[in-house]
Image (tube, rainbow, N blue to C red; front, side, top):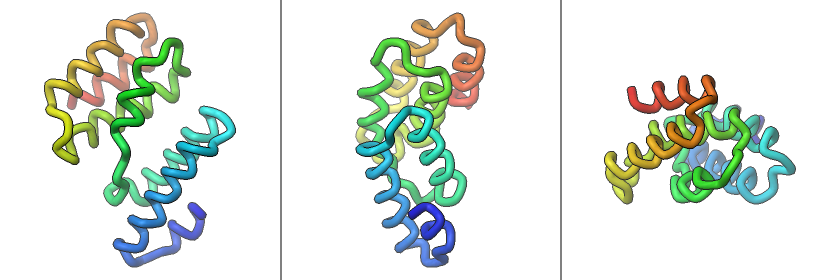
Length: 119
C-alpha cells in the first residue's frame, strides 16, 4: 500500500491513502519497529499530507519504558504536528514534551529528539 501511495501524483488521493496507511499501522503493526518503519516511510513520501492523530501519540507518550526510537518518532510528530489541528495549545504540547525530558533524562537520543522538537 505504501508503494502504491508513493506512486500517486494526485495530492488529494495521496492524502487519503497515506491516512489509511497510518490507520493500518496503528492497528496492525506487529511490533514497534514495524510501526516506526511504516511511519517513517509515510512521512518520507507524504509527510506534508499526513493527518496524524496526535491523540494517539499523546496517549502513548505516557507509557513507561517506550523504546527510544519510538519515543523519538513521537516527539518529532508532536513537535511538528501537535498544534496543527487546533485541538492542543503549544503550551500543552510543550508540557508533554517536558514530561518526556524529565522521564528520559539519561537517554541522549531522546534528548536530541526533544531539542529538535522545540526548534
